[in-house]
Image (cartoon, rainbow, N blue to C red; front, side, top):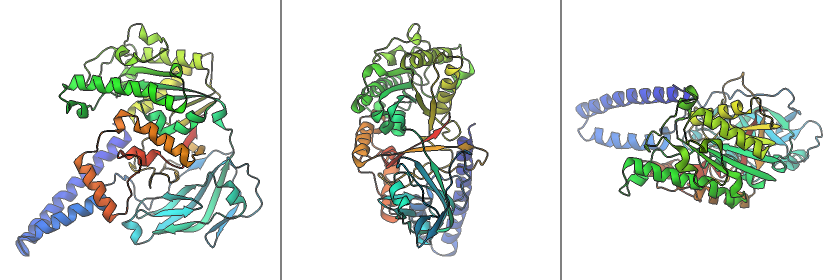
Length: 464
């Protein structure tokens, strides 16, 4: 069982215990006070839960994030004076550096009910309700203002306290190189790296699975479960090779490998054994490879095996010769297909004639905070919660203009998996949160990923 599954199991157990205690209190209030009181309290309690306690936050907001950056990271001295971040000595910045500022953020009373955020320049970055610990602001894009002493921090529903610490991470513009993005599912490349690959000198998009499961939306059209899964897989396979064209990536540089969703761990455990789809009643990947313009080793027999996956990846890497490979970060992103996608790339590279200069990791999911990046569409992305001080990290952040954000939103809007309406329960919860907790919907779409991914920044981590 993954760490996230363990955390979710504990969260659900604690919720069940709370519900039992709450039920006993409601019964007692009906017996001791009035018969109608339990009904009123139940409605009030449910609304309060949906507004303020429904987030999957598997840590205390008062916990300090525990980051350890690589030893070569520059740390110029800064101080916080009158809300302004001031350098102790002049600092020459090119303007494209990744800039990270650590400081303590302390929530006010209202910050326990409304998302607290820190505002600076034309950006704002949001934190957990009730936050009271060390957090990491992403100042990337503010180099000129920082050098001029013009970065002023203003907390809303919170305040910044203590001595800040600044990290400056110069790095090359990877969009000037050949970039290959590894996407476990259609839309992962767009969520994590649309700006990077759309700006790249040459880009390749490699999607490992068809993402055919959880096809209830298509069952509502009258299809049997297996038929619905096949239709969904074909649509997402099309998305994976068609949507990158919006960013100027030629179809010949997009590959859909057609392996089956959530089956990569089983494939890795038995590399020679074909692992069928969970829902599509398929043991052949070729149905989902029909839009590829490249011939791949796995086309020969269509067997969904780990060995075929490795052969496909090796063939693509040798053909594309990417200088940068972008792939999921195995320590930050807990999705089992994402962890296996990383493992497959690393194994495929072993002994290969071509080796990339750089590996960049991304995280479209987290272990312990389902709302990260917190805040609204268009906001900056603060660093995610990390509590493993033994993990050495080097972030790389890109800044997206409003036009680039809109292009990214339109790319996500073309993805069939992000188009269906949310469940009624989720829509009701969002309405309650909008009214009582001040949360804004994304202007680009209803799916939560429009809020999470269409941001001022794209954030990656150096793995090599």
